[in-house]
Every structure is written in C-alpha cells, then in structure tokens.
Length: 581
Image 1: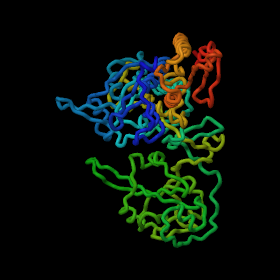
Image 2: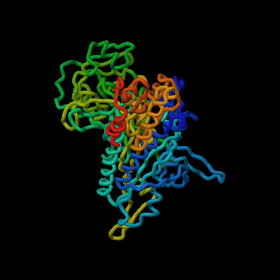
Image 3: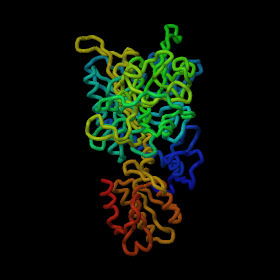
C-alpha cells in the first residue's frame, strides 16, 4: 500500500472525552471515529488491526476443530423467552419491535440461537462433539459507555459454543479451547495471564479469564511469582491462618471515639494497628413468596479485619446467600443493633442476626469493634468470653499482596489486567431450558453439555495499546500492527535516487510478502516520522540522500532509541528475518 492511496487522518490532540490511553491514541492515530455514545466507525487503519486479530483467532479456532458460522445480530425474542433471559436481563439487552409489533433483541451474545441450531441439527451421539463459532458484531446497551473500544456499546466478538454428550467429553472440549486460547494469545505477542475465574451461579471450577497485563486494567489479578497459580480477585482464595487464636489478655472496655466511624480513624485515635480492628458489614436476604412478594427477611452481620475488603462473589456463595443479598437499610440496622452505621459491632445486639466471621477474624484476640452506640467503640473484645462463636466461619475477603498462595509455593502478588477472553463450562443450563437433546447409545434422550468461549476482537487492540505505548504513540506487536513496515523517503521529489530506491525497496518487500506501506505523501520528515510513531508501525526504513550515497539506509524499530545504518541491499533480508517471513 502507498500512503497517498490510503486514508491517514492523524490528530495532534485527542478529543476531550477520550479518557484512557488507548482511547486517546486510537482517536489521534485515526483508527476509530466516534459516531455516537459507545459507537465507533472502524477507520481503515484500525480495521487492518481488527482484521489481523480476526485472522489469528480464525486460524487457531479452525486448527482446534471448531466450525465457523454466522448468527444474526437481530434475533427473535421467542428464543430468549425460552431461557427466561428476555425478562431477566436488564436494560443492557436492547429490545426492539418490528412493524408487526413482534419482539426482537439486538444480540449481546448468542447462546439461545446456537442452542436452537444444535437442537435442530444434532440428533445422535454420533454427531458429537461439535464446536460452532462466529466472529460477529454484538451490542450491549451500556449505561455509561466509556474508554473507547474498551467499553463500547457496539463491539465485535468471537464467541464459540461446544456441544458434548457428557461432562467428561465437555471437560475435554473445554481443555482443547483453553489450549487454543493460549496459542492465540501467544501469537498476539502480548503479556497476558490465564487466570482462574468465578463460574457464577452455574458453579464448577472450569472457568478461566485471559487478561492482558496493563497498569490501567480494571481487573485485579492475583498470582504467585513462584508458581503457575493465577486467579482473578473474585476467585482467589485467602487461606485460613495456621496459628491458633491467642488467649485473651485484655478486659473488654467501651471507649469514646467521637466522630471516628471508620476502622482507620479508630485505629489512629487509639494508636493501634489497623489489623487489630474489625469492621461490621450488615447485609439482608429476602425470601420471595409464590406471589413474588417479599416474605421473611434475614439480617446478617459479616465481620472482617479492618484492613481487608469484602469479596461479594464469595459472600454470594455462602449458605443462605445463594439467592442474592443486599445491604441492609438503616431502619433494619437500627432495629437490630440500636445504632446507626459507623459504630456497629457484634456485642450487645438488640435483635439476633446471623454472624459470619472471616477466617482471619475468628483467630483474633483483644480486637476492636463498634459498641453499637454512636461515638463509642469496644476494645479488648474476645470470642467465647464477650460474645458467642460466630454462626459461620468462611473466606469472605479479597486477598492482599503477601498472602500465602493456595498452592503453597510462596506469597501472592497482585497486578492489573484487562479481560480480553473467557472460556467457560456451561453444563446443561441452556440445553435444558430449550430442550436440546440427542439420543445416546441406548436410544434415550440426553441433554447436551455445553461450553462457551469468547474473545473481545475489538477490545483486544485497545488492550494491546494500554500495554504497548510511549509518549510518542502506539507500539504495536508485529502480529497485529496495521502495517509491519513503513518506508519513509526523505524529500523524494527533490531526489530521483531516493525516489527510485524507495520504490525498489517497496517492490522487494511486497514480493517478499511483507505488510509494507510506502509514505509517498511528500510530508516533511518531522511530520512524517511523528505520524508513524503515533500510528505505531513497528519497523521503519528511512531513505535519504546522505546515507544513500554510501549505499545505506536507516532502520529503526519502534522501540529503538536511534536508527541503525544498513546497506540497502540487506534491508529486505533483515526485515524478513525479524518478521519470520
């Protein structure tokens, strides 16, 4: 490609509404143009990146035995009503009506449609296993779209769905996909981690997220530097302390803490470590009657160390919490504790509550908590003596850096990541809801076991930029760069030799199968270099009169601090070697 034929539209400044680095640089590099809130045009430069991402994904999915198809963006509501998701999903599901007043959805995902295909096409165990995938546009009506392609409303995704005869076969299909994903992300040339993820209401342990490591990532990734252990913050287990609970050494006392309603404030006032304090979190669960009305309400008190945070996913798995929970209202809190929030504790309750203590809290002695009276806290609190043992002891906190790894191979560390892929075992959730069965060896109908596997095609370039950029612009990995090589002639209109050498090198690169662009726009060197540094093409060859007289050109990788003179005759071979062409 020649630059004069291409559409290059760089900007000196990012639009005011661009927040994160990837959003700013994609806008400045002319890769995307905003059409509406969370909706973008993929401009030619950006589309080349997306197509390269798609090509890698498609090659590895095909190699893993998956079969490509395409499912409609607009889907009939009837299928979604079969699974109940039409009513249960929130406003993120865009619902529309056609001219005949029939309900449709703009798909955010395609479990219903692919299950409908499977129940029509797969009749016998002899047809299994099958893995069907698509690379298709999706729409999720985000309440607050932001960060450009990181959290847009319209996006492109690869979603795959496996169908198997039983759990053993389904788990084998899952492992095939998990390995295919590792090959895909290895080819992208990004630093990533495959982390154990929570499986939600479906249960089970087969769920992994693929996270691109970036300081600006929204997700916290927990890992052990000394082993392969990695999990997202919701999944990571905080091990139970090994040391026994110390004996009580203090008497319980009520102390004045006026205006100090948080654990850090109380710890500072009393001159104690924050880890000596215990925070109280009051939750409620509601039983729903057959008439879909709230029946009995139960109030729960969760106790965590003052320097720890509650993990809502773990809490949601506690016995009695599986149906969902909410934070208790102030009226409910005062009714049970006799005090407003800020000074709550488990001693001297007005009405019984179900007490759940984190593993760390249950081994504490002489701890500090609220006294259930405004402006007061209790010190020297001890289990057994001052209050009963908790109703339940569980891991309900987020891990912190320095916690022991669950695999026993060192301490945990935490870094930030951007989720770009997810592999997930579904079981029979959708096949049961839609009666997707096959006949087994005995001629009996069985529900298909399913898995789903997603990759954010348009999210991935944004994640790559968050990981690979500097103050000049983007630094693309070779595999997904819009062009891998740019040839920059200096004043070719004034030098026939420079122009001829540039055209010759361009032709050689094309013949060698390199993805090359020749900048024949006649731009000044400074502006030309600034454009390509912003766009992030990884390999640049500069041809100027001075070096050409010596039979040389200048080669510079996007990460290099300075250019390296090379004989013109050796450039193509060097590029082929570096690009593996």
